[in-house]
Length: 219
Image (cartoon, rainbow, N blue to C red):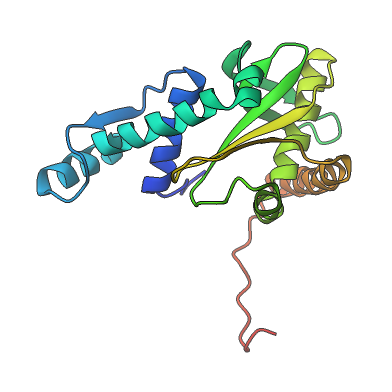
């Protein structure tokens, strides 16, 4: 809450790509009239946008994001998955076990059919199912999937599948449409439950200790 996530060009390109893929709108985006960040004027405009809480992208980013979005639209299955529905749907609920207020914002909702999550991966080959599967494990994507599935069910009574549309940010922008297996979702659900329980306990006690750095060389 206090520190947020630091600005990063890769995140900014991903934000722009999401907007173009989903046909949504993001008031934070600012297009800087430059094709890279090398000039002082472009750097100043970038810093000013960050200072205002905006997401600066240059025209080179816009061109790159357009190619990424085009790759998704040209992929038959991805195009079919995103053919109907609505972008960036937020929903809120109270976790029954802890009383914690939860929220989720799904990239694309296909009503009564699926929750769609668009992921941009910043390297050639990153959309390969095996490689992306490693990313899912490393970044705890099963926690997100379980949280969204359970949250939507809590709000609507519907239990919908959670589907990833994965696109590479580097040419030729390979695309994969995939789904986590049930055992991964269950593992994510267990980690999410543990996280909610710890969060509720610490929030109630006001106990947020600093990381305990060991005095000796760590094993």
